[in-house]
Image 1 (cartoon, rainbow, N blue to C red):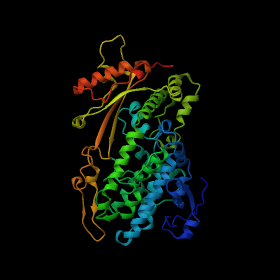
Image 2 (image 1 turned 90 degrees about the vertical axis):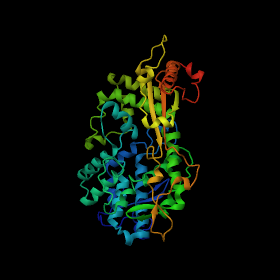
Image 3 (image 1 turned 135 degrees about the vertical axis):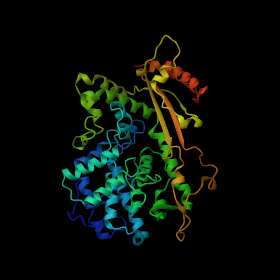
Image 4 (image 1 turned 90 degrees about the horizontal axis):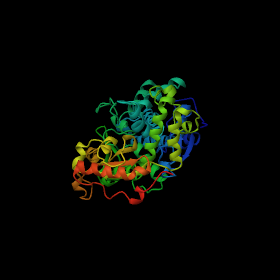
Length: 473
């Protein structure tokens, strides 16, 4: 990205509330979700690096575009969106409560920079790399994209000699880690509320979700009736915590319900998961030869890894990659792992649920002429929740009555509606046959597993006969 950039890093942080002459001479880009996004000079120094530009080669939704063709947006535009929303949110708090909260231009700059860089550590195909691929090639691996984001930020600063205040840099990294198990933030930290804007570990309401819920819904051609603008316009900091007007309770619930719906219909769509399983298998088979997982702790090499790894495998002449290439070719020709069936774990069993494996299915087959092996079957355990596991996220959110009130409180759900959910997590077990001619045998073994585990067939219906008769072309 070509950029107008003033080297004076003390220039004001740009926002919609900035003077017109500041915006007029700033670098700006047009975003199809938020409109004009104005970029401040310090953030431009990070944007105009090869490490940040790499985000253009990371699709926001991994392989989802193979099912929803419009989902080709990247981590690059999402990061710009979060940058903008983070700054706008902090600016609104400064406008409404600036004197009380002592929000200064360095706070605004810090929050924006955290929004910009929060995803810079993502790997190929985003969450799939972290949650599906790495556990298969590195047992016990505790790697996370947030920790890599922190390492990558240090690498960018050192490599490009970016002049940034050390304390600001530390706060940026703390904001990125705020919602993770690696966070070392104290609840009484100074201006603690600022750390909840980008990645909210307290209750899950943050601008990262604001952006991806709207952006992903639009890209996939789905509606989104959650209005984040109502929350940012009416929020208020009370006792170092961002709180929301009580009348916005249902809108807050829509945020979490929209997220759960996207998980169910888009992110974990059965075909999307089938393709993910195949891409993961291909990358695992290619890993020993290409060393895909070798440099996950070295940002100087890691930044070179992106979604193009698929094409690297696909066109390589090396015989060592033959099996991986065959899997990718099957994806291209839509010869996917065949979805056999699924069931939702009974809610009384979720608390003690143990992940189902291919071995569980193999051990459930009856004695037939066809003997299944673990490598014939793929199982995915899909968890869908409202961002807080089995807990109700709204129990962690503080509300206030009106702007004259000094009291913050939690709203019990039974005082709002009896139509709201009483269970906050689904666990869905899906089974795939890696070859179409195995669908019948795998489906039967899967049914036997359900009978053995629950005493009933928990699936909604039988596997269609037409699917059982398919063969590989």
